[in-house]
Length: 92
Image (cartoon, rainbow, N blue to C red; front, side):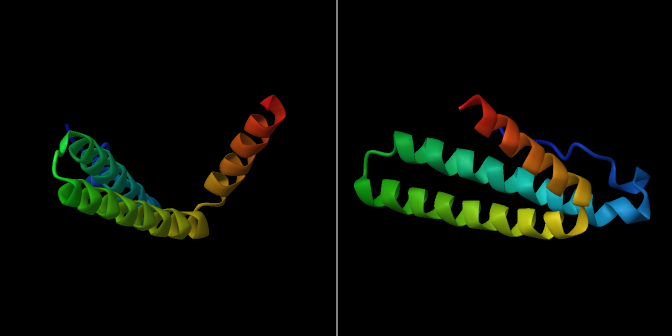
């Protein structure tokens, strides 16, 4: 159900370590969002459903924090995100 860390930390170059830590954090937050939203969909009690969806929103904020940090450290990622945005806008 949950993702495995897709990297071998001990084999990373020192310059890449912080970026990979942030990416793993992003993966963990997305896993958490998926988990809480799936549980909310199953919950019958509206209070439980509401709390699970609130927690999922908080995880999205955490994802944004990791992403902001990553974008401050990886200019290639910034460029590729912009490229992806332009490609989507061109198709719609």
